[in-house]
Image (cartoon, rainbow, N blue to C red; front, side):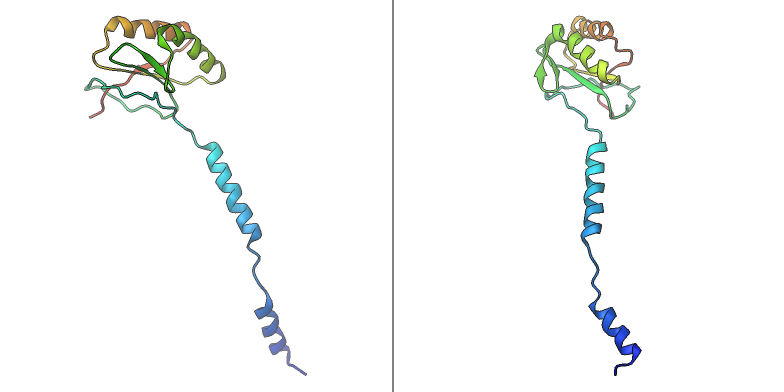
Amino acid sequence: MRSSIEQKFEEAKSQDIDLAPLLDVVFILLIFFIVTTAFVRETGVDVEKPTAVSSQKLQKSVYLLAITATGEVFYGGTNIGVEGTRATLMQLYRSNARPLVIQADKTVPTELLVKVIDQAKLAGVENINIATAYD
């Protein structure tokens, strides 16, 4: 007859660790982090921004509009034009109010920039910022 020490040693050797619950927890955490991550929707065009001494960094969850040197207004890679600015922003702000950042090329006429800002204000946007090169 085997001693109790030998019997316990045999039982300890035969026990395996089940990793399935651990993998389940890891996948649930991965899904959680993916879902809660805030994605910034880029404008889809390159804009040469002017520089400013008083530049400040803003939070990451903002709406981005871009005005190109040729006078086109872009949101999310789509040319919405000045006329589409108000409708686009009204739809966005209906679901989630965030600050608006306008990335205007440094050669854009002031008149066009003012038209876009007016359309944004008519859409109900209260926090409007103009992007500059940050040094």
